[in-house]
Amino acid sequence: MLSKVQAIRGMNDLLPEQSPLWQYFEGHIQALMSRYGYQEIRTPVLEQTSLFKRSIGEVTDIVEKEMYTFDDRSGDSLTLRPEGTAAVVRAAIENGMLHNQTQRLWYTGPMFRYERPQKGRYRQFHQVGVEIFGLDGPDIDAEAILLTARLWKQLGLNEHVTLELNSLGSNEARSAYRSLLVDYFTAHEDQLDEDSRRRLTSNPLRILDSKNPAMQDLIEGAPQLLEHLDRESQDHFESLKRLLDAAGIAYVINPRLVRGLDYYNRTVFEWTTTALGSQGTVCAGGRYDGLVEQLGGKPTRAVGFAMGIERLVLLLDTLGLVPPELHHNVDVYLMAMSDHGQSQALLLGETLRDALPGLRVQVHCGGGSFKSRMKKADRSGASLALILGEDELSEHTVSVKYLRDDTDQTTLDQPSLVALLTERFPAATEH
Ligand code: ATP
Ligand code: MG
Image 1 (cartoon, rainbow, N blue to C red):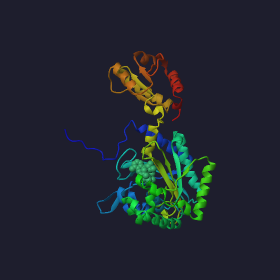
Image 2 (cartoon, rainbow, N blue to C red):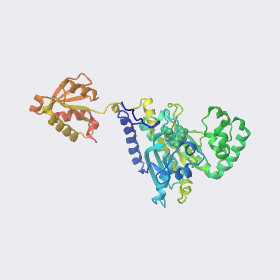
Image 3 (tube, rainbow, N blue to C red):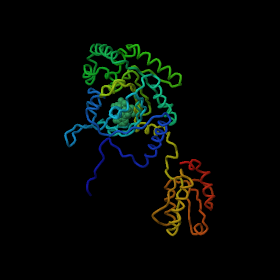
Image 4 (tube, helix red, strand yellow):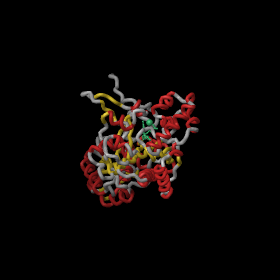
């Protein structure tokens, strides 16, 4: 046999048994975004490499070691997008969407990072994100958080996630704080790991984001940015907290939350869970008021977040929050007893789909004995088998066999069948 070609490490197939859960999640997202008046934007998966270098920052994990970058046939350096914000900002500037306007946008799609694959961390993964332009108050920060909180509630996750909040202040406050931090870490240079020592000169705030357990005590003792905020950022943060309090959204202040991307300022937040081990951040975001200007647009305030779909789907699965109807994809299995009735079986299938748009009907195809047809009905996950035998065909009736309980088989005419299915699958009357 020839050798098999395998998928790229860290890039997964989404198999049929997993796709109902993804569709369930994505369905919630679409409905949620439209309920808040957010519009979808889709950008290409490939961008010029400079876009990410200029936005995410040269001295970040993403740009230093995680990007899929290559030269195309004409020698241009391109990168598979590692995140969505930079591309949405690029598109918004390029399409004149930011001039005297506000935008509430959302996107979803694959992102690519060359990381060590493990549970909840892949090389191709998927995010849903929101980007809001032209609004600078804490009210819009609060709305973005309320939207995510509503999603957790709808999915049954609200008891299992925690909102962590911090403020990074203005650029000025941050650079003053940066010197304090450099002084502190320089005084303890012998305790820094290799990464942090490198960051001491290039990007000292990122030391606070270190996941190395050996560094945690040192980080704990570092001066805190929250105590060195500028007046305006302080007010912004206080107002945001009041808005969240008023809406009944619980949060914890995490003064070490700095995020791994350079473009953030003021509000930053993460939703975390303890149920997924070390890959515990399911959603993360914040303000990036300087990014539009940094990418060549007019100064435009902005805030956004992104959530990792793989981690959320994993979380739903781990916590047993997958709705039971997602475990099977067929409600009724419709069959003729022999090939002679196949045409009527197909027709009845269409009639039922006309009458009950939400009903999941699978019509038996491919012949076989009655016994093997019944076996397939059982394996389909359907709770009812609809059977067309010789008598049913001549009398225009259908026999209903209950596959999951002891109810006796019945034979019905078509209107009574539709009535029975409507009663048994009430949601099936709606599309
Ligand atoms: P982490 O600290 O876990 O590396 P991050 O700070 O790099 O996350 P962001 O760039 O803010 O993450 O991306 C937002 C969300 O996307 C994360 O909270 C996570 O849910 C998801 N995510 C990020 N990287 C991956 C990955 N390699 N595989 C799967 N999901 C990911
Ligand atoms: Mg990361």
